[in-house]
Image (cartoon, rainbow, N blue to C red; front, side, top):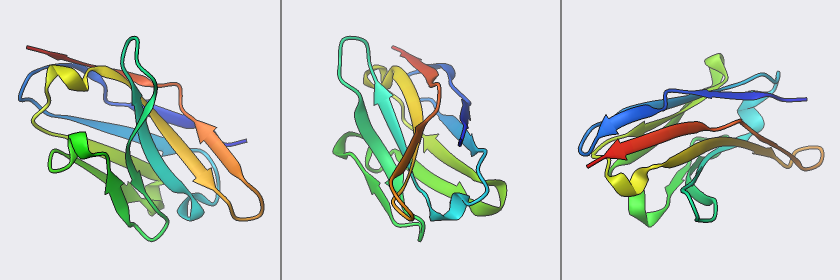
Length: 118
């Protein structure tokens, strides 16, 4: 069973930056596509950014140019650098790991709160 542990959330003023981290407990991290989701109060969970095993990245339109997803396979970690934050970025951010190698396996972290004040 894989565990994902997020960190780095907090309270920041609009225009500020935060960097989220997620550590993967499994032994074959490099085959996973890693994703960051977020869920704001009263809204559905949405995909924010993803990075594949070969480090191809993708972003939802709302964060393109402001957020950067990256991974460090040696540290079994994925990161989300968030710049130029706005109050609309306020949400609980969740780390997600997905692999379809030898079956479908998907895991979620517990979430970390990001609050952006105006």
